[in-house]
Length: 262
Image (tube, rainbow, N blue to C red; front, side):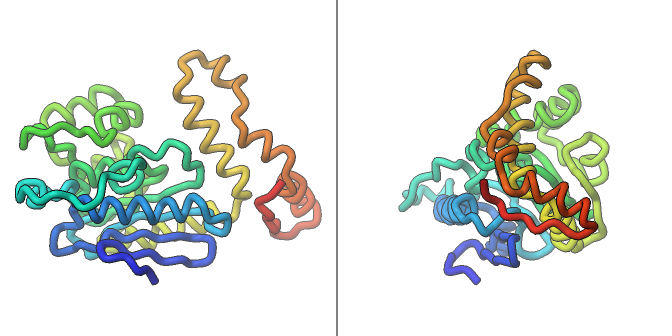
């Protein structure tokens, strides 16, 4: 259990679960909650025993409705700065190659949607709703949403959402392409855990080098150059005990025992 005030954390074997715990505020994030999210994901990134993370919101009404506009309008001064890792501790975190899954019930609006877009897999309950509505209140989606969404779905679909601020339900989100799977109401976390368990069957070094290759490769327009660029994680994988264990376990008809070490 965690010692945080605005979030909860849980460790389940190799799995780390972060829950935004402000259900009465639709899990909106003010500066203090953002700081806690940053610390939580810092600890996940640094812990060699944790291999996969899930981020979710408390209750069934919201994953996160984004920035706490009531706090922003109150004129209160924040006692803490925005973490360098961005909104929700994720939107500006560019060196995390461990996989992160979003389990979305209810609203994922504005910054909440941007947190989900910063993850690798989005599992959405049927009641999930997504939007970047910032222009409707004189804001813009400055926590990476304007860049991530058009990189993850067709441009015209992204612009159709961003230029109207309209709300997209889970089913349409899957059709557009930013939702991985839609599940029955209240089952998002359960399904996210199932996906995490599938990831945990794989070599963590292979998983991280895969994510690193994909993320860095998308920044290279020329396919041949992207294909021929070898990220540091690949070299570590090829020199690792996991690289030898996989074929050995296959030949011996047993489950591999991953070491996650060179």
